[in-house]
Length: 577
Image 1 (cartoon, rainbow, N blue to C red):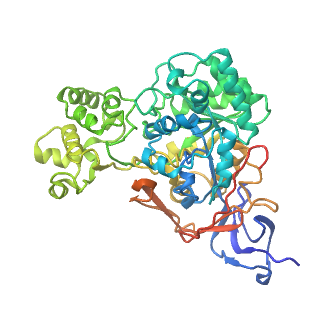
Image 2: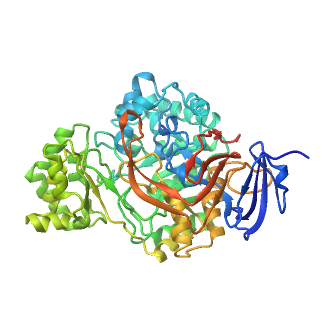
Image 3: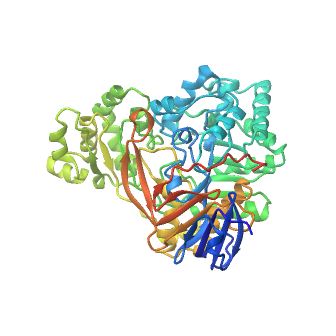
């Protein structure tokens, strides 16, 4: 009788298919689940994991990430890899790095510096740039050691850059010949393993928070209805694939109708959630009603990616982009010239407009952040009078300082930002979504939890913890759904939506992407800054607690929160793996 590489014994198995939980053993050989039963003898295993009293479940599938560059220096795609994610989809929102000619590489990276807030110096140092075509990019991903499995959309922005040029494509429509070339690249990219197309589309008013490095719309934001239909039809010619769209739900309808393929729409927000990142233009109830009509009445498969984390942020104004839906803030903060930004933020006339927006809309940037509740988190020690400023301001709220100095709160906020040369950090309070409001969206038949944005906005938000929070906060503490349903929504359902084969649930013959965790101990740690990016850049993270073992393709990647340095992840080519 053959010996297993590993046996997980005595755990409470939640298989990801909404099957009632049960206790059993799992035998793993060559990266796959070979046996699920009771009483697999320990002597049949090279290694035994004692899972008594623990939950054993499928690894999570994170559909919305931007690890397109980070995967080259961080094999485990953290934060996702810390929080039980074993498979990620990259290339979301139409953003990516292939195809790309060598002379266009810096322009491609510049776009990602603002819309997804990835530091330019980090990308320059951390990316190998050993490709030109999308297929060559996937080959580079395949060669790179990986601690998670990776599948990619074919993002549409690079196609415009490659065929027309990013800046030229913003000025004029594509010719028929250029459009055909881009559609051919969609098919070529999918044949190489891409899972479908992705785009961010702002619509006629260009009201989107994710702009190009200079504050102008992203090239896909200006996409015409003719272009969108052509791309959709190109994807449809292959008879497989899924699209991802950030923008109005109407664009998702167009893609679904023209392609005949499923669409993942971003994003479904709960009532009372932070309405900032992307700017929700439809109420949750109206969105759910329309999604029901599309799926049940019109035969269009449209999934909704639901934002299922409570929102908290630490941020600086050096490269902050989540206020870009507010014109006066966008004008002041866009670009790469920090001195120019400081000049604009010191201008009394600009401040007057910002105050008017503040009074009219409420909250910082017109969002849900209460200005007076924002805390000064840190001031760099190397600025003029840094130590004195730290003693004077760190740990105090803007409201406390405004009262003490008898100044307008916005003046206090901006004066401190300027004193810290825009590198000083501010911390918001957690915006808590009411449980009933979260339940409304999270339990929708077409809702996929997440919008982790893993790899993006890493100096501002930590929504990569979404899977841990769904189980530890929304299920354990507020019981908005069963644990069985939560694991289905976090693994099998997104795997089905994306077309990941042999992933997302526990069964004999399936890939051994498995979690072993302590339900009572599961939690997200505090926000902290890590200086672990190439070129000495920092990022904001929240680590995970309670995961005893995380397995990818049968190998342990994390044990009690510690990385084993194993890199068993695979490139998942759509239609093949």
